[in-house]
Length: 116
Length: 111
Image (cartoon, rainbow over all chains, first blue to last red; front, side, top):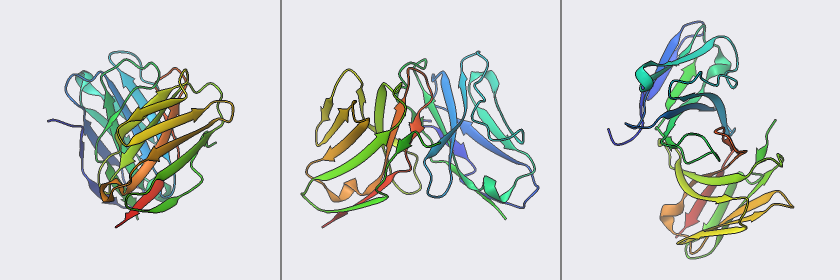
């Protein structure tokens, strides 16, 4: 596709359940990011993938969160045993440039996660 | 710890007038600054950027000003148009790939 694709666009789950969020970056983009935006907050960095390098997981808020990127393309963010504070919009972004000076990110439309 | 702050959550401006959005940062290592625009139900889209070696960058109706000594940047939109109504995020990075974002300012342009 032409842009970053995320699915599902909305996800409602019960506390304690696991969820998987998917991101399909722009073809050819080597860098992939996950951010989340909680209500009234800025975008919070979660994880960064660059090619075959080890991902930067420093933003993941707890060990319930994990992410993988298969074949250098599609990425899945998994949240285990969801809690109400996990409710947020989860945004995926990709970038064509190796990270220097931040660069311009291309964002998907996000997944609105609601944990009841 | 919010390293990038947008202290005005909202701004209302009349069509044709100037919109001024402000952003402050605390990390003196930041050397690249960006503004993103976000419409409802869409992801943020890149608007304009500036590196720390400059104090001004202009692109059409959009100008970003950087005051390094004050750790402050601003975005000017002149003239404001109804299509500019959106949430604007300020972002910054320090020679790496992690962008730190502000909480956003919602701009409403009144006809």
